[in-house]
Length: 120
Image (cartoon, rainbow, N blue to C red):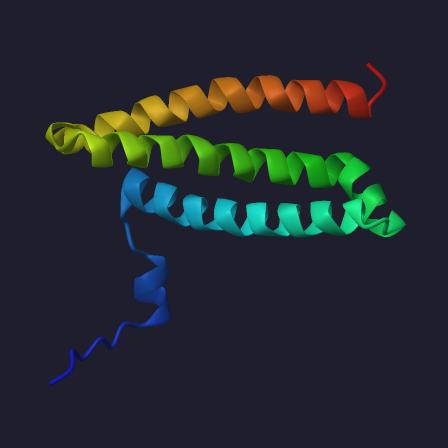
């Protein structure tokens, strides 16, 4: 006997999962972005000039940096909580700390990318 999950699109989009849901979605987007990055990187190593040009594009770098850094920092938070089961009750605090670290690290990294992109 299966579950009947008849959920409308408006109900699905209106889900108010808060921080944990947002980190879940952004972690999945970050994993996809890293897959795209590594594919482009391997193709650029093979000598495809269009991929080398894409790797040098500041918009591509910004996109990959934003989501790749989030994926890495969120993965670190998940690993810490998995290795220390007593900390799982503080997962919302861990998400807040993760966001603070992410904003600081990504802010600095994006500053460097933009400075280089716009002749700094």
